[in-house]
Image (cartoon, rainbow, N blue to C red):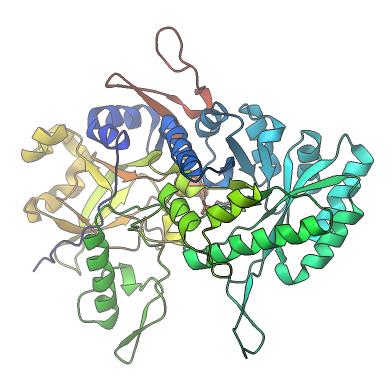
Length: 521
Ligand SMILES: *Cc1c(COP(=O)(O)O)cnc(C)c1O
């Protein structure tokens, strides 16, 4: 008996939704450029930046949105952001190559912030081009100050990144409770005095412009507390004669990947039931995504990024700024405004929401002998090409039939000739309705699964069809891509829509200008 399909259908807003409706265009791109293929919509990243800035305006706040470059390697996205208002949009780089890339894409040094682990070359280039350095530790500050003293040319703007935000356990409480998880980045708030002393010591070569944090959590409470603590610490800095003026609250605003809350609810409930053995497995090898069965009870925490979000991205920022913070009981937006502090944010994933998709050709469709009614679908891509699973689950791909929707209804075996002999038996055993499939990749590895989930598709795919993985621009499409087995790494193209016509160019050829004939260069 076949299971009722448990869909996790992706959220696709326009223009991504209308791109998905243009299956012939997407097929022609993969025909020409191969599978896998990444498709980016650079105009959407600019629209997303504008949505974050609208939240700033609603709260009367000044400051800048810094794109966390590490979310995507693309040039088109970075160039499109470089063309946005220079006062309002910057870029956050985490390596020497990202800094070089940002500069080459049109960002001037004063729009760049360097975060993360930094080698001396990155520190030198950042200081030389007038970028802001987001410092992790006193040792890094000492190193930067040494470079600035030796090579100049001017005092470097720095933020200091803090971590280990604590809260008092309350009256009679034994000490403090650390609310934010441990981080290898940033200086613990408890050691802030050493930081202030070092900043004073290096005042000839660096200028403190603000305090920063980046918490890898979706928790509003934790983030609100950290934001408020930074505002209080800014007062402490001012009392010492330092003059910071910005609070940088990092990234982590999140993306909603699944459109429908009910689908997400049903799937996570079913996952728990499958872990308990009440229903057949929903994953390859009974993988529990962090959940396990201990004597009939589900234990562990699902290591799942919440794929359905009621608030994410700009909406999440709005909520964070509006929600009263714990100590002073005031909204962070009010605190920032009253102190005339600028707000910096570093969204990665949320800024590239709806900015792209990843396409893969169906290469083989095979019934699973030991699991009647289910199929293995092998794709022209591997797990490195769509790597969401590190943080969450990959949502359902959209099936783009080779011949278009009319074609789908008829028997098209003859059209594919010898190519699809392997899936003839699949055709014979499928009735055309929803079907559970395991998506496997092109590597000679048992573990090369595109997702560990059993994916339900509205019908069995045919060899030659495309599967479109939607909303993959943030960390999914190129973060873990590799050359194992000399399989091709996806090419990336930028697409733009012009009066209903989609045009494309290689990512590296995209510049945010329109030529007289209306074609992006
Ligand atoms: C990764 C990272 C970000 C971006 O995080 P998202 O969750 O993609 O928004 C921002 N700031 C720092 C320091 C990071 O390491």
